[in-house]
Length: 205
Ligand SMILES: [Zn+2]
Image (cartoon, rainbow, N blue to C red; front, side):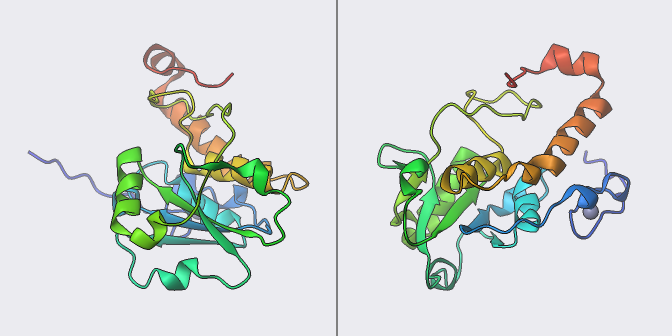
């Protein structure tokens, strides 16, 4: 039996319950790199919808929710930008090697579980054909709420923040993480510290 609970009123902008609205923590940062987030529809209702926080926090970012994107050319063929997909793999180039690139990157970020992110690439051959870039290994997540398959697993907002930092080291992108930190702290507080420590692996080092 499915028990339906009355949905709490949500902030239209950040989609959090009104009492936990994160908008006051969301910045409005400029970047040379353009970010295109492609969110799997299954992720929209996820409590930690961090792709949306990225799209709100960056001036030069766009969020598309779809598994198969219609007319994908209009998103990936942006004049003046060189498109690439942030996705790990043997053929992926490390982002730091793009620092001196004359042309700024259009960084396309599939958002979802690994399986869903792969599905997005599979459903959009034009996306799958683009060059791939990856973060330099060694970042650990602040996301301490569920056991990650490995310590490298990052929330989308963390991956984008670290990617932008690698591409534009002169800019401080850390304020982008403020609403994410508050989200995590809020979830830990709601859960109770004791339960949290018993059930969750701390990935923060
Ligand atoms: Zn809000």
